[in-house]
Amino acid sequence: MNDSQIGVLALEDGSVFRGIAFGAKKTVVGEAVFNTSMTGYQEILTDPSYYGQIVTMTAPMIGNYGVNEEDLEAEKPMCSGFVVRELSPISSNWRSTSTLPDYLEKHGIPGLEGIDTRALTKKLREVGAMKCCLSTEDISDEEAVQKAKDWEGIVGADYVKEVTCSAPFVYSPTDLNWPYNPVQSVIRKPARKREIFKIAALDLGAKKSIFRELAFHGFEVHVFPATATAAEIEAINPDGIFLSNGPGDPEPVKYVHETVRALIDKHPIFGICLGHQIITHAIGAKTFKLKFGHRGGNQPVKNLENDFVAITAHNHGFATSAEGLEACGAVITEVNLNDNTISGIRLKDKPVFSVQYHPEAGPGPSDANPNFEKFYQLIAQQKRAAS
View 1 (cartoon, one colour):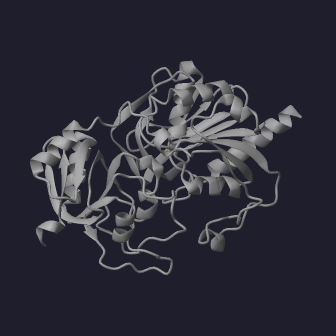
View 2 (cartoon, rainbow, N blue to C red; view 1 turned 60 degrees about the horizontal axis):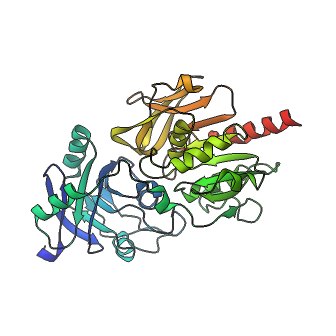
View 3 (cartoon, one colour; view 1 turned 30 degrees about the horizontal axis):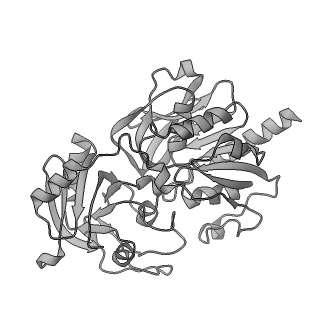
């Protein structure tokens, strides 16, 4: 290994990890986090929820099946940097169109391999998620540590405006290949022919697979930028409102809180991940930053209303606080069994519910997929009651 191949990951506490550079030749800063999924690195890389973060995979080898066009969750990688223990020297899959290093280089994302990811993950679990610098350029350890310390951090930053769509669009089961995913279409048939409900989806940094699932279950999805007003959304006369996942701190995106607050008495609403946290703020409750977050496809969640336990996919660094939640009219419906943090709520007197995890998976298990059908039936029930 020559000097041009050496890269560095430096944490704000002064810890330095040296490894082999791949991907783009670049220096970036972000929040150091880890993901415990065994597969699905491509979906993780392109998940907008990772905007502003440098992701470490705990699985020991990454890149063995390359990159393909079908599994992209966004048009490009959304994380700031990528760290692995070992980068596979080959890519072997019939759908692969690119190697992982070439894909990251094309999109300007630096990567680092060959470091002790177990030690890094243990440090993040013990100390918490930290500001960090990843560089595949020729900078000193001291420079890298200082860049990590100087970064402003994720708390209080509005990252939603960086990843939301620029203009409204429609994702419909009637004019797209339904279901879209060519792998799932082999093993799974579309929902039976049923009434199509029109919903407005606020794009806070949504994954493509979420819109696929909504379409699969019988929704015509009118997607709006996060900055859309309640009046703009009401103009399409939606049957329901969907709030997507997204990156960063839910507290500073007050314009979304206000929009949801204006809609919450008028329509059935379903929120996931950041959308769940937005509902929390819209009703007057609070969120807090987790020590190291939940990121992976193996998080056990218990439904307190039926005692069902599901293994779910998570990607979040903030959580809903139980303090004052009941006074705001909410009921805790689900908890994460690893740390008892809130994983789901519903409102007592309104057709509104939300979950902290990703029911669309992508990657991850499909245990929580019935939440999409729950949303469909909630709207159907409201329409029957109104007729």
